[in-house]
Amino acid sequence: MTREHVRVAVIGSGFGGLGAAVRLRREGITDFVVLERAGTLGGTWRDNSYPGCACDVPSHLYSFSFAPNAEWPRTFSGQQHIRDYLEQVADIFGIRQHIRFDHEVRSIRWDDDELHWEIDTAHAELTADVVVSATGPLSDPKIPDIPGLDTFPGKVFHSARWDHGVPLGGKRVAMVGTGASAIQIVPSIQPEVSRLTVFQRTPPWVLPRVDRAISAPERWLHARVPATTKLRRGILWGIRELQVGAFTKHPNELGFVEGLAKRNLGRAIKDPELRRKLTPAYRIGCKRILLSNDYYPALAQPNVDVVASGLKEVRGSTLVAADGTETEADALIFGTGFHVTDMPIADRIKGRDGTTLAEAWGGGMEALRGASAAGFPNLLTVIGPNTGLGNSSMILIIEAQLNYMADFVRRLDHLAGPGGRVALDARPAAVKEWNARVQERMKRTVWNTGGCDSWYLDANGRNTTVWPGTTSEFRKVTRKVHTEEYEVLRTGGGAPRAGAGAAESAGARRGKGGVR
Image (tube, rainbow, N blue to C red; front, side, top):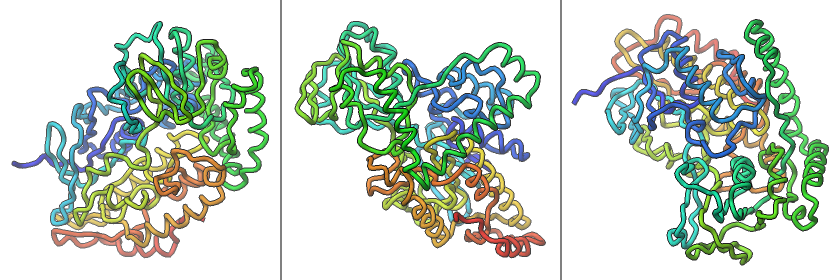
């Protein structure tokens, strides 16, 4: 059977996938598809529809620079507003015609003879010169392996797969986890349940959420004077850029912020024992700092119990914590995060030697400039290894990686001769050097020195998630592809186009733009 061939296949239709699609069209490339496993677009903002779901990054910073939205209703937007925004982006930039819904990718295999990827989805088989994996790190929920979980008689679900058909009113509900989702869910369901038990392995640092409605005059001004939207975004970005040094170089400077968080806790929680349970024993910033005005007040309500221990075992409707505490529950909700350092898509991608990306990353994820893994030609990841942020908007990182993707495709065009095919495979030495520099810088960051065990760390205790620098720095090092960091693969007898060799040499003389 002849497979359909496309120039680029993008996996996922969240911010990363839609951003890649828009950028491809702006580059004049229309021969691409967006493969989406679900029936609608939106990525994590489609999947996470739990009560209270909202973003902890200001609206005007949590949006594409090329698609400003003057109509954000609040300074911090809720899930539905963000999903609506993504739908608008797809419409405005003509992306829907490229999206293949219900096309979950089952396998991706590299053909070293044809220099292309063979892709099998739930409904189609195709080939692509380039694959852009934009599945994101927050796409596959992680539920811990709890002994006896299958004996629980009530409903069990993850926060990212919220079961809206389960009425919680008057029920005894257990919430496992105290991360970014849990602190939004707890105050949202506390008033309606009869009893709410929160299983907390590690308390988070929580700061007030300075959220408000954006007034009609503000929205009017942003719509009619676009420069004001750009200015607002720039101010929000600048404030966060100035904070980066405390996270990456001088964690002790975070003491002032830690003091603010302690005062926030003290104002809301008067009971000394509960306050003790909720006081973290690690440096603020080691785990993501959470924002909420109603989490602490909800925990102080008489129908809420905080168990300062993780869930260890389930015996029917009885939940047993690691400290021996037993709790009866009718519904069990997991807010236990995602497969971030072991992304499931990596099991489905086979590179040049038949090794899966998951196997190649067995010792920890690593990719050149967060995008290219050695042995996987013409595969680019959006939000790849060490591209996450601890204090700013991931949209800034995504747009930087889209710059890299655009230049990558341009380089392929430039290097390909008439009738020939070209692929770029990251050199193992280049990947190793890049990763070594990143990990060296990571040693002094609060994420590595703050005394916590966070989801930023992989099974080996290595931080393969966060970028240890500013977003402007990341944008600089991903501005263009340095061909000397790649092996150029050819087929079809194509020779480099005139000037290609000179361009590569000039790029080498200018330097690699590596991490300092």
